[in-house]
Image (cartoon, rainbow, N blue to C red; front, side):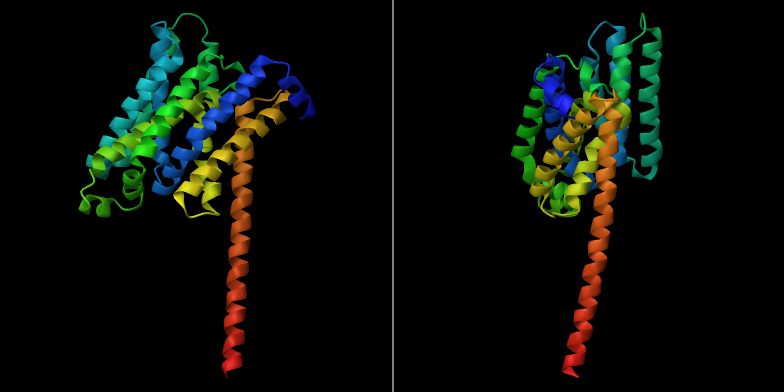
Amino acid sequence: MDGFFTALTQHTFLQTAVATALLASIGCGVMGSYVVVKRIAFLAGGIAHSVLGGMGAAVYFGFEPLHGALPAAVLAALLIGWVRLYWRAQEDTLISALWAIGMAIGVLFIAKAPGYQADLMSYLFGNILLVPRESLWFMIALDVLLLTIVAIYHRQFLVVVFDEEFARLRGVPVGFFYLLLLVLVAVTVVLLIQVVGLILVLALLTLPAAVAGHYVHSLGRMMLIATVLGALLSVTGLALSYGPDLPAGPTIILLAGGAYVLSAVVTQVLSRRRAQLAATRDAWQGEKHE
């Protein structure tokens, strides 16, 4: 890892990669917390994989892949949200169909695009080292948009995430804010594409937030911890992959997965120990009263 930090001071592409990881971690921590608490990871996965259709179409017509990713992600979010709200009886099947259709459209456009689209494949599997510096401004704009909307409507999102029925009784337009929440998840997916690719995006979106949820019950604190953890895992994974020349995206996800498994084991052990201590204390107090 020492070689990575030495190279970081010398190479612009590594500095861009670290900046990309940090910017992606903001959306990852904030929106990932909503996804974990609301338990909509399957919906987020459908949005993520549908994005390939927009990226393939953008490349076919001569545009940058990310310029097609954002509208495709927003459209997928609205369609999936509409299915979730009005077609609950067939929700899983319809979302799976949209997921598959989006991927199929992307593959068809890629097949017909001239030449071998190496850059598009990096979006599919992730290559943070190839992110152009100009993309940082695009990511900054998306982060600012995301944080601004969350800051304005956080209370509405809160009641929609935790209790939709209570939100309806309070006069909150649940459908609108649910769809807006999914659109923000779509924006976050686009932010994460360049770090880990479409295939692995769901893991980075949910795992840091899930780890944070083991230790805090406040959504605000969960967002903060998930953001910091996402940044730490991303930069550490990038550093570990640099020396042996490993793919950075899968390395980051392995770290995130390892952190989640370790955290789950630790919290389970601590929970059992607390239960045993409580049982021992109750038994001791019972004997004392006798």
